[in-house]
Image 1: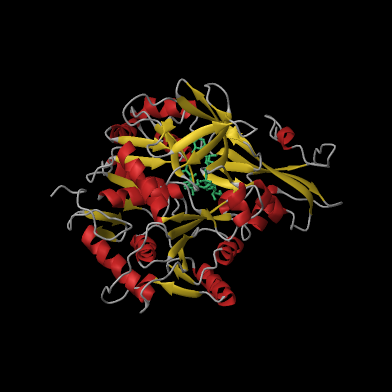
Image 2 (image 1 turned 90 degrees about the vertical axis):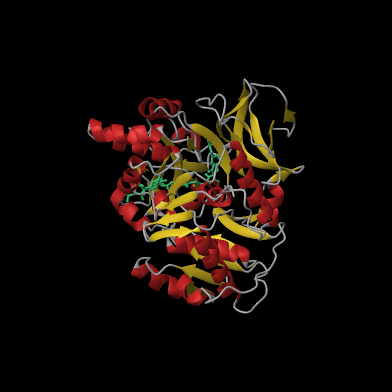
Length: 507
Ligand code: MLC
Ligand code: AMP
């Protein structure tokens, strides 16, 4: 039978498989689809622990990329729980916020995390009355009966930064995830014979939906890395292990820098391997035209840029077959309604007129967890308001920016300036501060802190960075610090952030 045509009889995830084909390749070994199904079913049975259905219990997942991560995520789905994937490299206060906000009752962790982190997690879980588990101790000896899951049920909560200070929990249903996956399978011609590396963080849709779920749904081979490791990854690329490659622009920038550091022979072995792939995709942040052209010149691959968001999965994509236009994000994916609206909420039907991107469809999330007000505010007449501004030019959408200056995209991560400012303001020496994203070739935007100190105080960047280490994820830590007497404010007393974003401000 044709691999990929065989649907697993369970509802979601409908892994397609033939028993012997490899589903996951990891540093610890390979798992065929049948091994993986068995392991997931044992995990689901273990999580159920005699119950018939987890009934949307929130279960946290704090496991780096591995078979244990996949087993846990899909085990929770299969047992009727809501998976709450967390940033394995996150700072404790951030993990605490996610656990508390999502009302997590059990947390599955991996013992290979740093010992100090495990101890700190133990203390935190104890204080929050959360049971901490490992995969090994949860797996049942034999798989038992598992519940049938209706597609409208909640499956996952992912945390996303917004314009308020703390990240919100985005709730997706099984139906949402199915819609997000199936549209990509068709749009990008996924096949069971595909092979893809997965090195992106596993608490965001790019890694979870676009790579992992798409790969496992179609019956492809997914090579899971614990994190992005250039040498290891490039060795596998050189050995022509992959047909597909999906990454954020920063990763393409870093690969180009890496290739430029190699001698001609080693560089050629890797660039020709990229060339032989079926498809290279870029997304999660704007792909500069310069990068698009550099990648094409170096590897012969025309990057396919697409646009997405945690709340919608993917919305717009350049075509797999057809013109892939530099600097543009293409057209609405099948099954996804996309339209632009002006400031008065009127639909824009003309080309070349910018407006907010709004999205409708089965792909759009259900709600922000426990935050009816934020959910209500983010929809208008059934359309989800992305806060991104775009224009349609010769048929294709082009992203122009975001309606809020307080959202920063750094290396594909969406960050809230207000959240970072809130933490910085708890520093003893800081009187006032404003955080902005300054354009940066590697990161897209680099987190930059403008700070006015309390009288008589001094502060250096290394000092600030080390203070931030236990308080925020590494990628939120300011890359630059600019000390000012006072911050520029308007007549209303509000910091004039556009002034701080002016090119050359840091010189
Ligand atoms: C790491 N650092 C970052 C950073 N990532 N700083 C700013 N922004 C980032 N994104 C810090 C490190 O802590 C370190 O700090 C220094 O930068 C250099 O680290 P590195 O080792 O060179 O970076 P690395 O660990 O390799 O990480 C880079 C990366 C990672 C690009 C691989 O950021 C990444 O995986 N980004 C992808 C995020 C993602 O998946 N987003 C999708 C969201 S979903 P120091 O001080 O120690 O030197 C979404 C929807 C959609 O957006 O459309 O897909
Ligand atoms: P997140 O909330 O982490 O899912 O990030 C989603 C945001 O990433 C979107 O709202 C956009 O601002 C941005 N984004 C995703 N893809 C692109 C792209 N191709 N070009 C520009 N911005 C993008």
